[in-house]
Length: 292
Length: 168
Ligand SMILES: Cc1cc2nc3c(=O)[nH]c(=O)nc-3n(C[C@H](O)[C@H](O)[C@H](O)COP(=O)(O)OP(=O)(O)OC[C@H]3O[C@@H](n4cnc5c(N)ncnc54)[C@H](O)[C@@H]3O)c2cc1C
Ligand code: FES
Ligand code: FES
Image 1 (cartoon, rainbow over the protein chains, first blue to last red):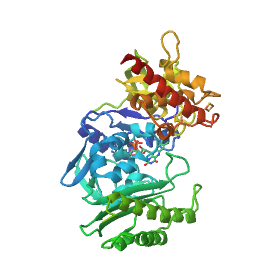
Image 2 (spheres, each protein chain N blue to C red):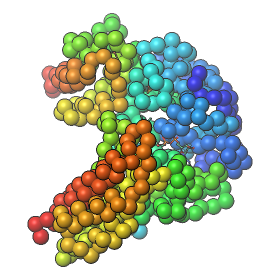
Image 3 (cartoon, each protein chain N blue to C red):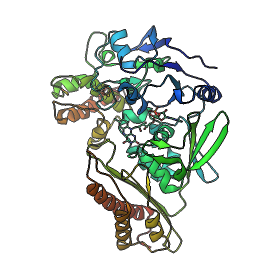
Image 4 (tube, rainbow over the protein chains, first blue to last red):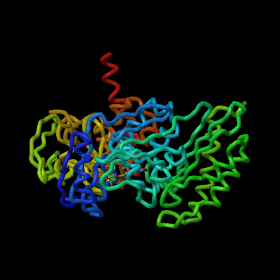
């Protein structure tokens, strides 16, 4: 028997789940896909008194589009997002990022909201949220609040989520026309958490200039690194290999990764530069404007 | 309000047979299958999600049974490696292909690979090699070097298609 002792509830409505969290606060943990929480329980890194299993909440597995935002519900699993024609069409960056999360067995269970709540510095989705300026909808028995990505991710496995709250929904702006995107990462074994990953999206104006750039990296700090100054450098410019190399150089200068058992700081910085350049070039290519 | 439980009664269809049991809520699906039902074909390697040895199918989807609680399987249909062979013991086409391609040596990883491959081939009857490799990426084998496993899965895809072709 691996996990520590806990009491378990599987509420059948969100209201009930929120009541339980309100009553038990930091004693309780939400169980979503379990793909991060169960390993921590099995290793006894966590000993919550209560598990609130949200897998039986009805109608919470929807992906839809409203007011220019793609909305990903509480129980949408990685596999579902990966296969969704709506995601592929409205937000190719998200589709490509989700495909790179773990392995098929992990994606069959893991949820997008869970991944964002967990906030692993190597996780793909926080970087996608940061690159696109997405929002996290938090819900408690007391009400709802909506936080932009940069106010939600606070540090290593640390977010603005309060113990009585759940991540109810993710909101991501739908890609405008004339957009190309790429999510590239480097990992030592296929499917492992990547050493460094880059989320890049470029939107072009009618003249073929870069109208908007979204760029964020995983694996170079405790939170996703939003490459704001590289984005500013790209904005308004005509795309070229040289411009992308310059933006990648800027990223290299500004990231401040730490060394760990997986890679030295210098190697991570190198990956950040190379992957940024490649991701920007791929985004440009995929926008299909090169010939113009 | 939803009740807080330490033990719970569950009903699960396991390899086509309906099973009812009472479990401690912290029991993983893997431990319940192995210790509760004696289905020790599902192996436990790492018990934290990285090796894939414990892969079973829950409602047709390959999942890590060490990362699911038995109570979460309540009301589902679970398939384990014991459910693959036919009633007379005739091997499933994927098992037969593993045997013929020497896709196992010590056999510890095999149940996980078989269940992963079965789910994959049910969804992708005509896979190419890169997609086979990606499908198997979550399973670790310390013996074979993977090559024979990839070949067995490709061969099994052909075997599974053949009866369908013959029938129609
Ligand atoms: C072998 C392996 C490889 C993996 N590789 C990757 C990878 O490459 N990239 C990657 O991003 N992830 C990876 N993962 C993790 C996977 O993506 C998880 O699915 C994800 O991190 C957590 O989602 P979950 O739904 O499984 O959450 P759980 O494991 O159920 O929960 C994780 C944490 O978030 C909290 N939580 C979950 N949902 C909510 C919610 N809606 N509201 C509030 N709190 C919530 C839980 O209380 C818990 O603290 C991997 C996991 C494994 C086992
Ligand atoms: S025992 Fe479940 S993944 Fe290793
Ligand atoms: S056959 Fe020994 S681990 Fe795969």
